[in-house]
Image (cartoon, rainbow, N blue to C red):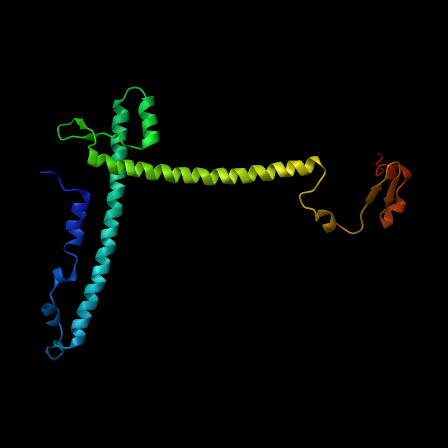
Amino acid sequence: MAPPTETEILTNYLVQPAPLTALTTLSQFQALFPRAQRTSPLVRSLFRDLQAQRGATVDAVCASIATEAGRGTAMRREVLRARRDALRPEPDAELDMERALFGHVLVMVDGGDGGAKGHSLLSVLPELEGAVSTLEAEIGMLADEEETLRDQVGQTLGGLSDLRYGKLANGDLRAQGPDKSWHFATASTTTTIVAHPHATSLSNKQLSLFTKFP
């Protein structure tokens, strides 16, 4: 006889004895009230309401059991993989490649006699579906990361192109500066300098530093 699974154990101890009808019946519930009120429709409605609330709680517990059972399966896979890796003296590149491509399809499970047996056709199909879902999720993440990197590279190349041709990425940066500043207008052979109002105190040598010749 096969040992009970984690789902069966949790269901037997948490779900089956949980419904309200497993704890008390309508007659027993009515007996808790005064004799004059036991036949009131409100008592029956209260019992049905409590039964519905209890049912919602049981459904939540069933969902939690399913989630925990999935975690337990993943933990058992990791334990079996650790055992197999410990028994393997050297890394198996072919097996590592198959694991990367198809997931843990080839994971061996311990038999009752201490040996190992492979998956059957029915047991390998869920493994393949899980591996496909995992690969699809990883491909989607890589595609999003590729798009983000592509945008970042495009922005970087655009900034380098503007720097090469003497353009500013922010075209309004010059307009955002102070109004009273040096402005240069260079022609083919002449240079015009519009000086700051207080530039008269500068010497000719200092002014020559601001002159740009073609």
